[in-house]
Structures are given as structure tokens and as C-alpha cells.
Length: 237
Image (tube, rainbow, N blue to C red; front, side):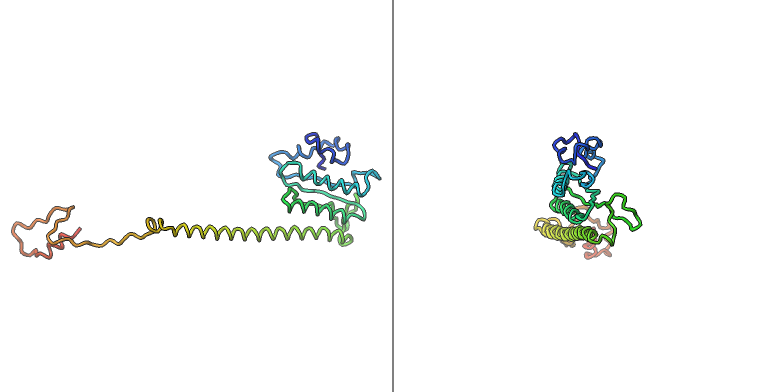
């Protein structure tokens, strides 16, 4: 049920009664494990307070304090109100307040992670605990549940849309800075500048390449090797 236990003595006052100590439940200690990703608790004030021990105003105060205490234990994990049930004609107002508290905590950056009502029942299911909600017979209660379902769905759609815009802005910034970086004069001058084309430089007639021995004429002084041919030969790599 999510009752507080010995690990958090300052929170024991938020339990519905001293009888909770016999249930072996310690909300914080039970959830304070690295292998548990989120916490859960239940809320049934009609079952926890018998008779006139706690009137409607008392139960409303208890509900507010009980939810607030579970969302501020220091667990630093999402907290789900896994079951909440209410009997009687004031069920709609009660559920509306509970949904509003959990939802407001979530949108304000708290650890509230959702609310699950107990319980939606098919028409052929017997109401064994007086908490069953039948549709369309209990249409007003269904409207309360639907209204917050729409709020959550709208918020999720808005978050996705905002996320896409943020990604788009980030990409524009990165692209702009990248272009500015690539346009830096140092990069243009020393990195991206194309090397000058290699052109053949003419050498003076009769010059000898530094990397090859001078051309020796045939000892017979072959006149078939003319001067232009000699220059061409000297210019060959």
C-alpha cells in the first residue's frame, strides 16, 4: 500500500493509523534499491478510516498530505499512484483533486509519474469492493478520467513537438558554426587552398639537369642528332 516505515520516522505521521506498522511495509526502504526504477503507492481513505473517525474534510486533508509526502521522500525516482479508489457520490470530486495534484506535481518538475484509478469494470463484473466504475453508467467519472488522459496526451504531443524544434535549432546552430569555422581565413589559406598547378619550366639551351649526367655525343659526331633534338633530350625528366 505504500505505508511509511521505520526508515523514515518523520513520515510515520502521514500513515492512516498506527495499525500500518503491522503490515511490514516501508515505502522508502522497499524502493531504495538500484534495481527498482520507480515507486508505487495506493490510496483508499474509505477503507482506511472506519465510521466517523475521519469525516470528508479530514479525508481530504489526509489525501493531500499523503500524496505530498510520497512525492517528497528524497527517493529521486518516478512515483506512480498505482491504485486510488473512492466510494460514494463524491467520487468524481475526489478523483478530480487527486488527478490534479499528481498532474500538477509532474508538470512542475516533481516525481509524480501518473495515476491509475481502481477500477474500471466490465458490465458483467460484480462490484465486490464498491470501487468499480462502470461505463457508460458512471459517465461523469469517465469524463474525469478522460479529461486528464487528454491533458497527458496533449502534454506528450507538445513535448515531442518541442523536442523536434530544439533538435532543429541545435542543428542550425551547429551548421552555422561549422560553416563559420570552415570559412576561417587560416583554413582557407593553409588547408583548403588548392595547390598551384605544376608547370614545366624551360631551361636554357644546353643546360644540364642537376639530376642526370650530361648527354654525351657519339664519338663519331653523328650529325643526325640535331640541336633541337638535344634540347628536347635535355628537358626530358
